[in-house]
Length: 470
Image 1 (tube, rainbow, N blue to C red):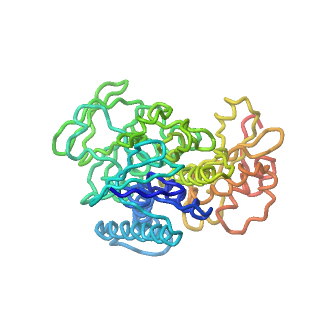
Image 2: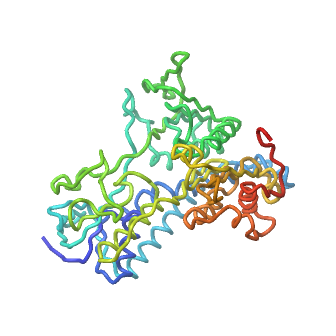
């Protein structure tokens, strides 16, 4: 059995692990990255990237059917070419994975394929397809990610009950799809498959969708999704899945028991950290329930062992894992770094999109912070009107005394792109007047951000909002 020594070993090659490897290499370290599958992890291979590739196809198809005639382009025979959509998805994934592999090679990061397991705090065993090796490193970063949570009801193991991974590669667009869970994954797939023509039912045990997002915008999105034909049932309990043709989901609410038929049942009830089989139980690593506990430097309680990404719970987002990876790499190599979660953008690729950063109104009130709220609808934005995407608004939560922007929440066209301005504002502590008086190009969607900021200070130009009590 071969043994090699490195400055830093990283267990898991997702967006946390591979970014940590690249950054550590930039800092001059000799790095080994251990990944049992393809680099890029869930995000690149079966998560963020393939879902957005399919989302782009579905949005284009929806626009061809719904908007094109109004814009003066007749597309009477638009059809779904599912095989080509799948090819577009896979080509996108493959190109990005190859790009990451090339970056690792260029930075001289050693890539070991196989399953890694701790033998001691500074030694890992890696079981590959053809050989077993060991690596020793004074610093090790755990970046093993998360997996879909199971649905604890009878029938959850039937054929046709799927996770988000399988939902990306179905043989065809289902006629009927039942989704259990109205979080980010559930709502994104509901939007995607509804746009492609499926009858979609979403079952959620809580009284709202997208818990943690701004409540007002989540309510508006709920109305828009229902208007698009998605059947969303809240406050329900899933009782069982029955093996029939199609599958039948039994659920109950305050009015009694009901059923929802589906060719597939997508379980989207969250994700859980992956630690089983890694050997961390032999190290005495402190846990936060099923997640690894770390401090702001991404250190565990075991010296020299760090953890990042979904395996530590909290913000289970690819861009957060990448930020944590850079912090962990710096600290592992003697630099001083700490994670800052104040301005984490949270994006939902629904139709329309929803994006948030910073505090919601509810967050501010819970913290007893006095606030002012500015809003601007996309129906009054020239650019949104020009391509018939006018549902939604920009909402800014600002401190009532200083006008400093505490949070920004956007429902509407390209919300996931527009939120970057909000993230910068929150991170830098910018006040609403500074954003409102920054010259924004015209006509553009970011002007809606500008106008919402001006609404905070009472200077909004292109819309007259009726205020309660005014």
